[in-house]
Image (cartoon, rainbow, N blue to C red; front, side):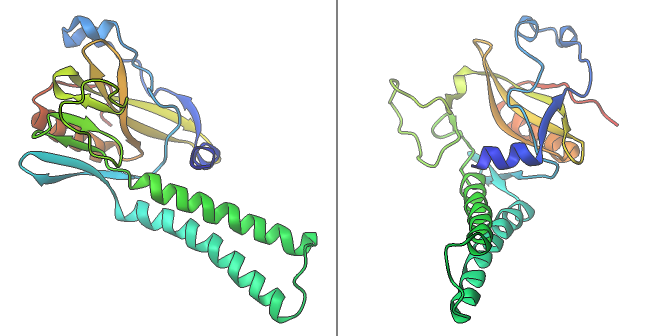
Length: 222
């Protein structure tokens, strides 16, 4: 549901520029992809990097993103309740198309908004005490070397931070900017992507210093 809504609003497109990774003087840059690790995007800033403590930073949902998600959820729920009550009070509540279609539309918006709100608030954490990154609600336990979820990465496996861009074609076309973790084996894990280039660059620079890992920035300046 959440992916379907975002994909409807933001169709995938093409990368913003041609980037020469050889100038970074790291053999791994020539082995990894420089296209988006996660197709699609969104036109506004959904997450911001927050320093929780000297040992922990998190990408938290922005106020605007929470408002956007909540609007969908509340609008859909209000439509279902309001329309159903009006039909009930006028003794016109039935299962005909005139009643069912608005209710179904309201349910779709309400559920989609609820999913956006739920997944949009999923913790995205870099923790020096646990020495790992995770992108899930359950905090990973130390010492569990086996069956580690794919969205939990030990700091020693992080080689660099990568920034790439993507041109998104939709009703309104725009660029979306993506921050990825590059692991030592060359695989990439998407951390966040949104539409604010300047804010993402600033957050990536702060994260690079926090992790003491190089920042590979393939997003051009204006």
